Each structure stands twice: as C-alpha cells, then as structure tokens.
Image 1: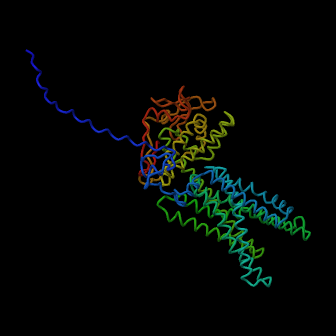
Image 2 (image 1 turned 60 degrees about the vertical axis):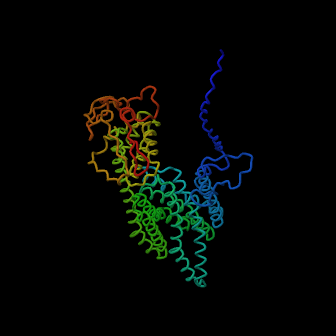
Image 3 (image 1 turned 90 degrees about the horizontal axis):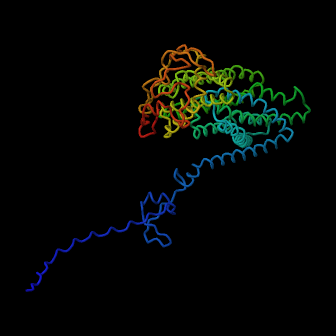
Length: 564
C-alpha cells in the first residue's frame, strides 16, 4: 500500500549573511589641487573630479604670506634663488659705485687709481690665506666677502657719508673755512667709522648666519673680516688715488712730489692693513661667538656688538689722527696702531695653534675607532707635517697624489671641527650625515694619504697628550672601540716596505707603531692593503662594517645619531 511521505518539518532559516561593507572611498590623487597640506589636515577624503563639491566641503587652509612656511619663506629656502638675488645685488652695486667713482675722477683718473689700488691687494689676500691654512675657507665665501666690501659696503658708505656731510654742512654755519673744516672733521671722525664699519660687518654677519659650518673660531672671523675690508679699501683707494691724480693734473705736479705719490705711500705702503685691522675687531667678536657653547647666549649676542663698537672707535681714532698734523699722525701710528697690529698678529697665530690642537684632540676618537691610523692625528695637527706629506706624495706619486693628500687633510680637519661643535652642543640635526660623508671621503683617499702622513709624523716632536675637554651631557656620542688595534698598530715597529718602495724600521714613535709590514688581526685589513675584489669603492672600514656591528648612539635628546 502506498504510503505518503511524512510531512517535511519546517527547517531553520539559514543564517543571514553579514551586510557587505561599503566600498572604500577612492583615495584622492597625489597631484590633486589640494596638495599635501590638504591630506595632512583632513586625511583621506573622497575625491570629486569634474563635479561640483558639495556644500560645506572643507577647503585647504590658505598659506600665509610671511613666516617660515609662508609663500615668501618657501622662496627664501630656495638656495638658487638666494644666490641669484645676491649676485644681482652685488652686480648692481658694482655698476653704481663704478659710475660714481668715474664721475668724480674722470676716465683717466679712474684708470690710474685702479692700477695703483690693485697693487697691495694680492699681498693682503695672500697674508690672510696664509693665516687660513689650517682649514681653508671655500673660495666662494672669500669672493663674496671681497665683492661685498668692494661694491655693496662702499656704495652704502659713499651714500650715507654724503648725506651725513650735507646734514653737518647745513647744521653748522659753513660761511667760514674753519667751520667747513670742522664739519669735515666731525664727519670723518664720528660719522664715517660708524657707517663704514657697520656696512663691512654685514658681510661677516651674513656668513656667520648662512655659512655656519665654515665659521668655527677667531681665525675664521679675522679672515672673513680682513678680506671684506680689503675689498672696501680697494675701491676707496681708487677714489682717493684718482682724485689725487686729477688734482695733480690741474696744478701741474708730477713725480715723487705729487699728491698721487704721497697718497699711494700713505695708503698703499704705510697703512695697507688699516681697514683690515679695524674690521678684524668685528671678526674677532664673531669668532668668539662662534666658539661659544649653545647655552652661552649672552656671550654670543653681546660680544659681536662690543667688537663692532671697538672697530668703530679704532677707525675714528685713525681718521682723527689725520687732523693732528704730521707729528700727531706719526705718534698715533707708532704708539697705537703698530702695537695693536702686532697684538692682532699674535692673537691670530695663537688661535691657529689652538685650532691645530683641536684637530689632534678630536681626531683621537676616530683613530681609536679604526678610521685613522695612530700617527695621523699627530701629523694632521702640525702644519710642518702636512707640508712634508704633500711634498712626499708629489715626489713619489705625482701632483695628483699631492692633491689627494691635501683633500684628505681638509676633510679630516672639517671632521675634527664638526666633532668639536658637537662637544659644545652646536651641531645641527644633520650631524650624522655630515660625519658619514666626511668619513667616506677619508676612506676613499686613505691609500695615498695615510702612508705619507705616517712618514711626516716622524718630523713632529713628541708632545704630551692633552685631555679632551668634557662635552656637554648627552651632546657627543661615544666612540666605537674595536677589539684589536687598527691594522696591527699598537705593537712594536716592524721593518717592511715603505712609502714609494723604500723601507725602514718603525721606531715605535710615541704609539709604538711601525711603518711597513704590520701584524694583521682577524677581520681587520693591514695598513695600506688593497680593497678586496668586488668591494665597493668608498665602503666603510672592514673592522667597523664587517668585524663589528656599528653602534648607533643617540646624539643628544631626540637628535641625530653618530656611527663612530
């Protein structure tokens, strides 16, 4: 019998599927009109392309005109634009001052003044370059300083002195010759020093602010200020000598008895360093401020101002001595200016010696880390040893090797001053990048420079090492100390092949090193060893990059890192 199937039980409804997530809004294109500021302010938002934005849609904030992140601030951060504006400013100033001087002296007087004024310039520039041999300044800094003094500062002084003299003439009764002479004397003694020294100090201030890496101490300030004053004196001498020549043409004077010869003797022979001496006072002030620590804000602010006032006083005394007659001028020159010039020379030489001491002290950390050999801090801290190393490289390997040694010396000196700035808390946030770049440049030139410096270190007398000054807390990273001395240094000297093929036995000079064949430690190359095949050029030392891990120590609080 057929049985009907049992009725089906109502089954449980299947579980409802979870609602589909709404599609993610498309990300706005990277090159949208809102730009990075819009994304940073409002996050990822839907992008409407070709349609009108809904009402209430947030708009990106408008950029301010002034301020660091304003539109003008962005233009100022463009280095090419700043350089172009500076070149245009100096060019226009040069053309204007050229036209003014030619108008007062005439074409023939201008050419005579130019020919005579240029004679002492090479001597003065060479003297300042000799002073700056420890860490030579880039030529662009010196050219800017000279151009500023010769063009911009001279133009400002000429215009301001003209207005000041006219004001004095209208204020003082100039009906008599004595009244007019008094106005000229007051203008030369009181107005001209203030205007001229302020105009020349502007170049030192600009390099102090925008070329801070090249401004490390008193020597740098003296060199920059001296070059600026040399340019100023050059243009001023053209004006004075050209005017004297026009006067001689009118009155028929010629030869030694002419006014032109007397003016050249006073300004070009007796006192060619007058303007550099005055402005060097300002340079000393900025040099002291550059060497001050970060927390010494009062010194960094007041010392340059006090030095500028001293330069103005010296300039006023010098200009005022011209009104005292022949004997009064000679008395001021012999009893005041000459001793002051000698004191400035002594201060410059002493400061250069201190800079060499900084090189010896600060490079000791890199020598202990394996980047430098033991004799290098000794040789790099002596001008005589530097010269011997360059001469040795030139005799054995040619002029290219001598240039390599000079470049190695310059980079090592920059590295030492960079670390000293870190000691004083003045290194910027790119300290680690600068340090790494300088170490890479040293490593690329080590095969030529290190043997020459090792040989030159033998000519330096042994000195008792001075302790490195204690840095600010948390300011300088500790140096990395390898397990064994770099390239076997530290043991007794051994005989081996010397630089350029000759050999000698190392005498254990101060550090117990021998220039020649050295003992090799695991993971460390012998001194002067060729890089392994396939190794990239300019790679870090094997004992740092391979034998030991690189320590990354925080530089200060939240600052850069050092890989020494």
